Image (cartoon, rainbow, N blue to C red):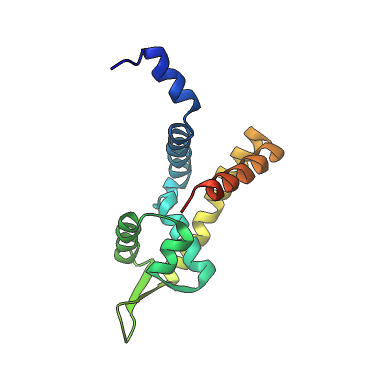
Length: 148
């Protein structure tokens, strides 16, 4: 290969994908750490929150809303179902499955929201409200810039 160590390091500093993935892993680990007392991870929290927002939805809807890859979504839903936090029911016709929160899931979400708020408050404190909001707007613009 004709790449020097310096070239590779420079690419790492300017590569959007590399930097987003690295940042995402760090933020996910941080949120998982703060949510740990609740017994669920940030991905599961995102799923529970999305279901609560929709009240009831199909797995396809949930995939669209959360943008979690289908395999990870299915695995997470199975864990949430096993733990009694969600109910998954097959529709009378077709292959559509409906997902809703159980009473236990509603309680778990309420319990976890306070932990999530602590993580959010920490990020806002560290970055400042203006930078946090600017970052969120920039991430939205980046998502829109990617061709589908």
